[in-house]
Length: 233
Image (cartoon, rainbow, N blue to C red):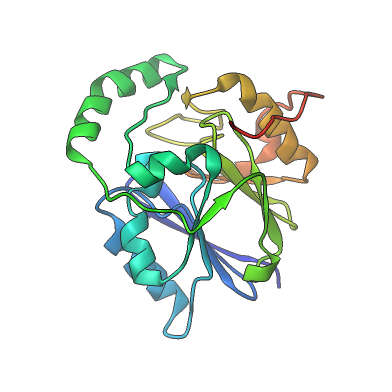
């Protein structure tokens, strides 16, 4: 039957629930949203449903701010890439470089507000990723791969059936952008093309961003042959 995909949108961030022989959650969500996300996930899972793993695509507040609450509610371990793990451990506020005028506006105007009022609980990751992780042991036909660019430790989840959950490597929809794009922020924008090419080479066909709606991978240009990004140091 393949992997069942449910999108739980709370605020502007998508949390994804993947179910096949097991269940995996991608991106716990933003600060103060953990209880809402947990209720919606429990409603989808039913009484007997259990989550085997939570994956943070990267360490920014709107993706890991609810991680502590959600881990308590679900009893599932949290996986974070080594490149962003210290941000999660310390609940550090980091804001990537703005790549567009709208990004510069959000960073300059909203950044100070968010950093002051949306504090979140630090979390020690249960699993610190290096490059990848096979999700087969968690009952999902897919893998986690390192796709740096938006952040040093950004990862994507690529299913054998061609769905790719890319965090903020790409976006599609307000308030971030109006159509599929490579996003309006990035710590290391020079690494984005290689990460995107890696996803295409792994067979990504449908992209599920953390902000906005799914879209076909062909909606964004292929960068062509590029060198594979090295793990963050």
